[in-house]
Image (cartoon, rainbow, N blue to C red; front, side, top):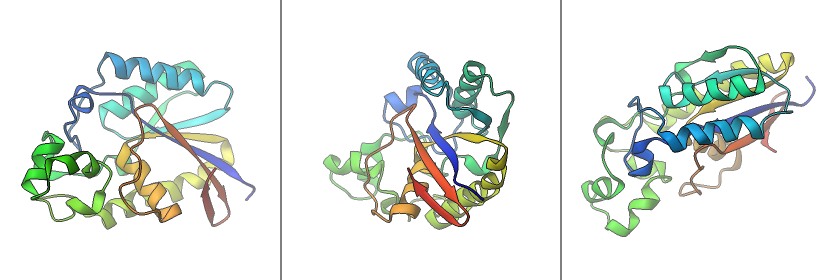
Amino acid sequence: MCIQEILVARHGETQWNRMRKWQGSSDIPLNETGLMQARQLGISLMGEGIGRIYSSDLQRAFTTAKIVSDIVQSGNVTTDSRLRERGLGKFEGWHSVEVARFLGMPDEQARILETDELSIENGPDVEPWESFTRRVWSFLEDAAVATEHGKILVVAHGGVMRAISYTLTQEGFGMPEYSNGQYIRLKVNENSWEIG
């Protein structure tokens, strides 16, 4: 297999993003800013030659993907539940500070929690990081085969992007949060993956 590319983007903003509430698998729609970010993402991807778009089945990702698809004229969007955000159990709908307090952490560490996935490993009904990462990579390995038919765009969530980055870079947790509408580029060469 020659080097192929998979682009992975985070959905546009929701009201819960703006309020710093944890979403997880809760199905929250894009707000007006999120719709604008989705259009900007589509415009930025024009000329990339995207042949296929996959999306999480949660509406914030699917709406983003559909808007991008209309702009880049890539055809239908295929949803896959393996691209859902990590399930955050009881914490969904909570503000970062509420989560920090529940975990006995100082309020000033609340923002760090949003990218420090292992610190919430023992939360009530939180999807284990290992199984979350495994399902994300299950999708990516299947999608890599489809790159034979052209470049792929995957529209998902910040946690999905962190699962990918952590696996490839081993930089540890507490990495910078991916912004709404941001994307990363993965280069796939046989069994080798890298962020390009």
